[in-house]
Figure 1: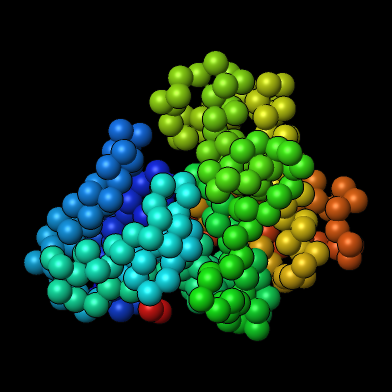
Figure 2 (figure 1 turned 180 degrees about the horizontal axis):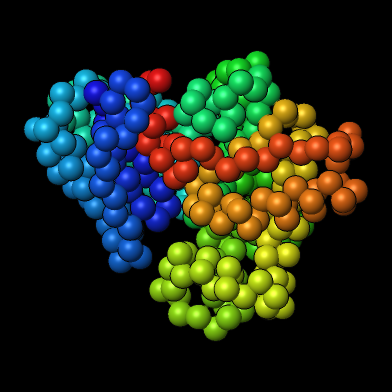
Length: 297
């Protein structure tokens, strides 16, 4: 058995994965703003405590970690939404966890899992996006993850879609994730509805479902769909994928957002090669794709 760990911009999830790639036990926590001031200690303490507890209950052979940003040989080179740079996390963890630990970019991990056993299974060319605090990405070419050398590549969230746009944590202006991440969508919805910043995603989803004709809500959704359409259309023109998968917290809103996204891309003059059909699916493994994909499948 294995332990899969998904470190996101706002949470940490740890799961035990059996030989069928199913999660048999999972724990997770939200990363609060105050905790991010001491993010390394918070992450390490949570992982060490829970991994060691799970090892008492299960025969664990290895640990896999998914993390946003640039990862190389056990080091987080840069994870802008966590404020981490040149962080040798694997070396630190191995001081108190004496089994092999592997690490990979989170969107790549999720894409591998979805390609093997999820919404991208059976397709040779696919694009996968994770929409959460930021936007991560991966490309599947001929059934394999696109290899880009020592740097992970496919940082779709940091392609510029708005000239002189909003400042991104990466230092650039106008990045895709500043307009089409789930964090931005939820923040815009809270602001438009005068809701407290602590209003959870589940509550926002319920408000949307109960108010399908609300003009304020639909305007926020429409703007989000427009920016998401622009970014995805660019990726379609570059990769011409057979299918697009979207994971992260987006999956909880997918029933509402995906039909609007498909329709908007198809009716707008965004695609160079016109299509009559567009396959866009939510991650079949939900927000657990990063946990499962962090370990070797």
